[in-house]
Length: 273
Image (cartoon, rainbow, N blue to C red; front, top):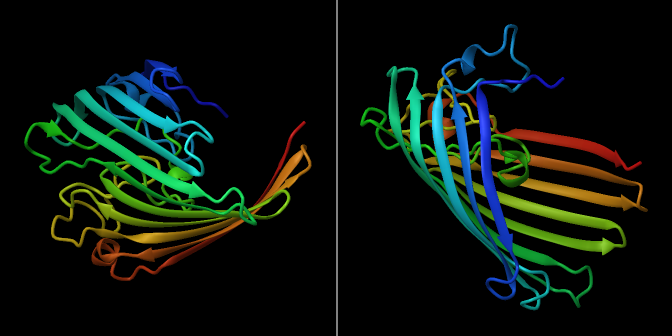
């Protein structure tokens, strides 16, 4: 149920203040991910689903984040972050250590019409994470997004991770009834560098079935539409239903000529006790 890899460690420090800069929360962090060469063989049996033991690496991430405090700018809100990485990354194909030189940056904002019916909100967000422009130059420039919740930020259909990607996200929400929230997100995905891989939600590079290093491909991977309805049942539970559609872009079509757009539907209930 909870399989431990004793050769993959995440440590760090995280500081947060709401007074250093008025009307916003300011956060500074330093994270270290240290993985030994024993990590790929850490599991004696088949690893759990969606678990791919990481190759050896010593990656250090330093980041700065800003987030507006609720209600400080009327209906406006904003969020921005910058993260840079250094250290080294073991490339199993090249059998040597590469210098880690990567960075990532999300920025977003929105406006909520608090006094209007349904309290609608509209927002725009951009997420970037670097890719490796040259796999044989002694540098590893693909951002390591550590142990993320990609599902929450880069499309509910779980096709994309925060690695080698440009993600433009349009988001809207409304509350037509008490307890009912409707949201709609639309993502546009481009590879940051087609000399690097298209990475899946688990962080693993897509290397099979037509995928691989495709520098000549169109950089546009596709777009995704997600629509979700959530209903709060008093204080003891939440019911939710959602639908997603992924529209293939040129990169996917160039890699998988026989592929098709994808549809996804789910229902879930959460009970608090």
